Length: 405
Ligand code: PLP
Image 1 (cartoon, rainbow, N blue to C red):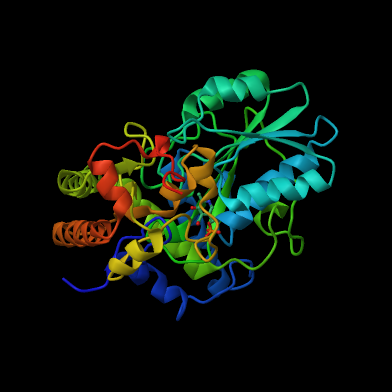
Image 2: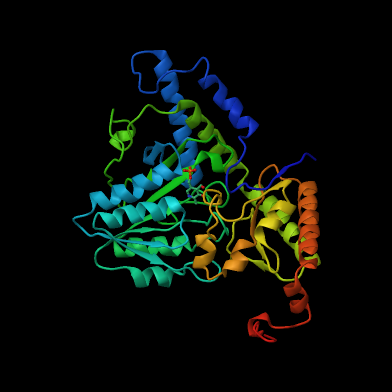
């Protein structure tokens, strides 16, 4: 076993060696521009792009023509939300989303608020889940879009997407879902789940960074978008710019592998994840699960440890690469907006750790990680008078800290 151990699979994943193999020719001999129509270099690149389009579409139950390549999910999210908001502005200017979305969604919505759109930010329940009734209650005559992630990147909670999709279709509202953490990890079917727009990102499913796509429904209903990047009219005018052919080939290969191995990986990841949790909670008290035990991504385990300080905990387990809060925001000291939206207090939010289990995680690594966490939390608690009081059964919420003064 090599240290440090990687347990941050929700932030990004290594490229699968099979994916890299598939990509290599497209850097070397097959380097053509997929838009070059006059020679075999271009034809070969275009053929590879179309094959990848098919592989990606197959993973999510779409047709290849419904896939628009982008530089990743952030760009696809911008295209989906701004593209719909601008295209349907004359129909209505109201958007429904949630407080626990990725910043790419939240900041895009904030941008639209400055240009006259209205956004409702729904609060999830304590497990990070939004019941369909909450979405229903927020819909208005002028609602044009519901934008909700399929699965949360921090706590792994999975929303009732099929019900929300059905509701949107019934009410004639477009439904965009951020599938970045879900695609390739759990079953995703845009037809059965009534999804109109969905983004995914290659680097979250063992493909390369810097490539992703937006699924845009072509019938029942046909979704129209205002493009956000204009130029040579690539991707049927929805996203101009020379295609990243090696990246797209890699994304296609990654999706094909994810589809073929989906069931097997779900079982393996959930078993390792549950083992990690069982080991930790067998040895430590006052451990809280952030997320929904039933509706959760197989590779996600987000725990908070009472009576330990978050930074010290992270330092104590520095040879395990984990995240506390979203990787994109962990540079800031602000507690995670996702945990806050679920009503988790600042203390528990600060001592939260997201363990991300993935394709290359081994049992040995899980054993080691559990041991390190247990040892570190115990050591830190030995120095904590609060922990001692809690163990003696003192309800810390009722203590009068001024007594004796
Ligand atoms: N949405 C979710 C749920 C994510 O986890 C991420 C990645 O952190 C993104 C969007 C952004 O994806 P990308 O890195 O492809 O821009």
